[in-house]
Image 1 (cartoon, rainbow, N blue to C red):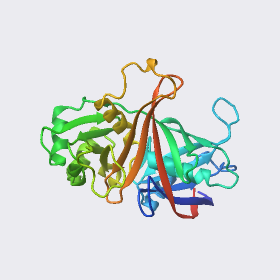
Image 2 (spheres, rainbow, N blue to C red):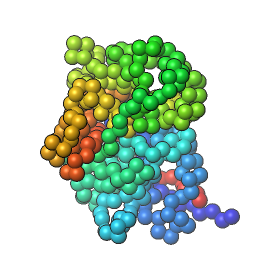
Image 3 (cartoon, one colour):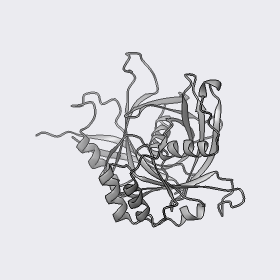
Image 4 (cartoon, rainbow, N blue to C red):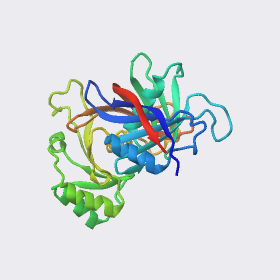
Length: 323
């Protein structure tokens, strides 16, 4: 069968980074409008092979689309998909942040916000006024539940070498372990073989470990105060540890807000735009990364997660896309 090779732009961006060589690197492939292509998207097999070739935690694929499903013409509207080396995922915060930065950096792009159509719905990203390379993303909130079977909880605790006093919850697509101190998070060393087997068997995306940060015991070496810390592990997706996981903070922010009784049961009493909670968080991976989070009430009365992060450029170039 005849193949076609096209040259497309690819960028690598460090997301949720305060400095060079920090945060979470993501590749962003700009596919343009795909005019004259055999299909709207390249095949999933091709997209997956590019993600494997990049060998980063995420490769994002972006297609510019000035027509919404309702037929209205909208500028700054894009389609977005995310692939890890192990497969496609439904939501990725750091690669969305990286994609927004790349889109905003294109010549002639003057819009103050962009909208990405994704498997998790429309995600809006805004430029932060007065700060270069800082963006605000609106994501859904993710609730935690105690619906994980007791035997699975035991296996998760065993993989993390922790006792029965450690709370094990379901946080959206992930499992969440709650520890007491930031030092326990820093010292976490899971058994990746055991964790991989559990996550695959139970159909869980990854494992989050988190702990609060007390003003009386601040994280050593940090200039600014932190509210909580975390780490994220997903050996089942080919990522033993993700440097910074934006989507995990949709779960973490709501969990810690409820623990501190910052979110009322009845949101209807709150005015649109009301900020229920603000957090400053660090993901304590070897690379490290920082996320600022706000829980905000929308005009329709829904609670959403605002993730604010900074990015650093690393490289830009061109790849050969064969399909």
